[in-house]
Image (cartoon, rainbow, N blue to C red; front, side):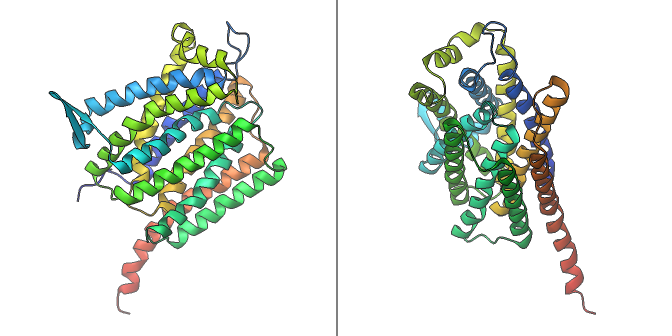
Length: 342
């Protein structure tokens, strides 16, 4: 059986981390340093439309050039063959749309650190992962439970030092939509595509993104219109004025890295291991990228660095990742030895 990766999942994880780090830095920097024309930093609602539109264009270009669209279900319009989602990937695309705009938005919320938002969002997902495994009868091994416990400890330590949540409405909405999106996505993945086969990964990626990317842009516009974080001026600037602004190269870079991140992410999450193994790996790597990005921003650009307890939380998550990487290999090495006669 052909697999979607030619080297271990940890190798894909490293590429995911290396592509996520510059995305975090660029996103936080452009929303923290005053804009020359506006006299203030750009808001998330001003930066997200362009970056998501760029990501949509580059993702569709990648799908076409890599010929991944050939593995997707399709519909013909005359002589043109266009990919189409099934009812399952349609639902997954809706969940992914929530993730696509809430993740970059979480980097831009004023007075809320990147590591804290990521700990909060990743903690919710790591609770959901083994529950999804249970629902689909997938075995959850001991190292996955221990890693989950470590992540929960990291979350509790950080929340305790902060004195609770105390988040602005846009941050609360971000966490809720992100968690809902991941629950939908993981459920559908286990239903239709968590086998590790190359064609299955390509098909899922194409059918999901056909729906998720345009829907994410539309959802961002809808949230902006409610006035929960900004107003019509920010929305108009983000969708219209940005294309002639000096910040556009930064936003193009953010959109490009979003595309790269999404490719590595789908390979990790659709690995045939249980969700309680794959999800902590993928989520912890993004958290490490967030903490690393915050430290680099503090050292080089003088932005506020992570709180010490947030660094402790990140250290606990690194321990969880090491456990998830080492324990399965040690188990496989000891089984043949135990099976040999004395």
